[in-house]
Length: 356
Image (cartoon, rainbow, N blue to C red):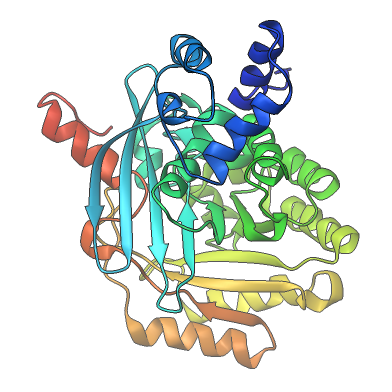
């Protein structure tokens, strides 16, 4: 069992106490970071020079533990590749909506070992879990550059609920003395890790939960997503029903449209049957249809999505009383799918690199 991780803010506080600094010094540091958006300890001029020098010596020049390596931009999307300790890389995506809202898609693991057949991150394999600081620093990096933290989704690299440090990161993000984010501005996506879903239900009931379905048929889902053999679809749905009963919160269902694979009339009708048979006849489930991005370098390749098939699928769900949305696509022109920038960077900087 992994112990709760001590985040950098707790370590700084302990460091100040060890060196007999008054409590207000920690408040000054947090004010410099979260109010004045100062990244470098040496630029926190409210602190004595001797303390700034001690902080640099102990924690490094920057409050950030991750280093930006490469950025890609399109009209509404910025994607950043960060270096973390051990010479590993992770990705974060910033999406700007025309209404002015900013959303961030952050990573929880470097790579992933669950092997979903349509996922570029799964093609990388799991390097390691991210620490809580590496998770929250992805948001802090953008915040220090003047961005607003309107919403955060754990839908980047990795399976969020397979990393226990995600729960530590949630504590930091919602701490009123730190990021002070409302839990309702945070979303976590999972392929169905039942024990962690139950922990979410009890400990973080206001955080939005998204379940990656991608097929309503057990055997096909196991082929596309091997995790289904460990946590079967119906067992996961029972757990999600329990989540809804306890929290009274909506659960989102992610469904990536794979042409000729899971976009048929039969699939749509089975999704309806699956959700209508759940708690409250599925009224607190909301399906997000996601168009497959054919540029994704995944274990299996699929054709480009047919708009007509997507609309037909949508209409079947809608006419059956299922809450459903066709999700907007951002950043296709810059390969914004998680794992793409990682793979491209590795190839360009290491000729011997190959995705498995």
